[in-house]
Image (tube, rainbow, N blue to C red; front, side, top):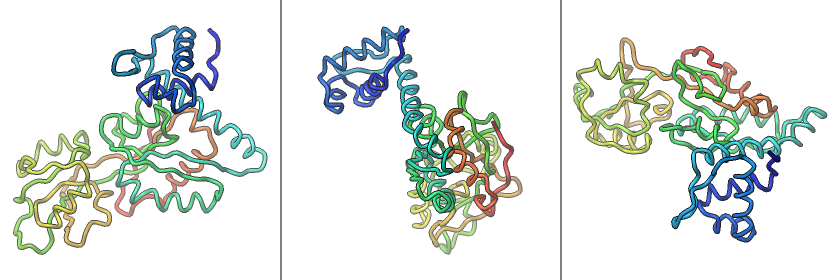
Length: 302
């Protein structure tokens, strides 16, 4: 098998992202026939069909999805090679650092971490993308080569297969309800929930709470839930990162005696974990200064 060239890897990525040969060719400044020929060459070299061709464009096969993920990760290593080599010589850490994070961690965990990181390494340019923590979540973004590191929710089994990482802290859930609206018992209010509420972490606890009603309103974003609670529309059971900086019209009541918790940590690829930029970010994430005041230390997961 002949090696794939960087040019061929970029073509595979473009076809996957554009879902078609013609659109990929336009984006790359190539002809459609050149893109088709390059994909056929890649398929011959790899010994697998990478895209299903049809009237609706090109869709990656299972083999194609894996090939494109590897292509992104390989190109990222090539992109950072010069930075790593120069850094080994002069001790600098420079260049872009791609981070995927769920919203509440991006809003309430990362700012202080990145402020310290960029103060120590002025040449580093963090780029944070918000990814919903459902389905493959931030771990999927890392595995697919779209992010160098992901801030993720982790259960006891640790990072997804093929990735490495660690739990940073345990995040408790609490009851969020309207403030000052004359409700004697906020637990009797309608339940507002959102799709990203990490049911896997609360399922066993939730099943034992006969006071929790079915959700009457379900939304996609936790900030919308908080806005609705502030308007007196109901209550919700939410993790503490989400409740950080909640509106003044929202009261936060602990769930006693044993609230549900979820693990918050980071995931990265084995190769990215060796880069100076990712190592520096992990050091800041694991610093005691990064943990919220309410957080419990979580066991490391490798």
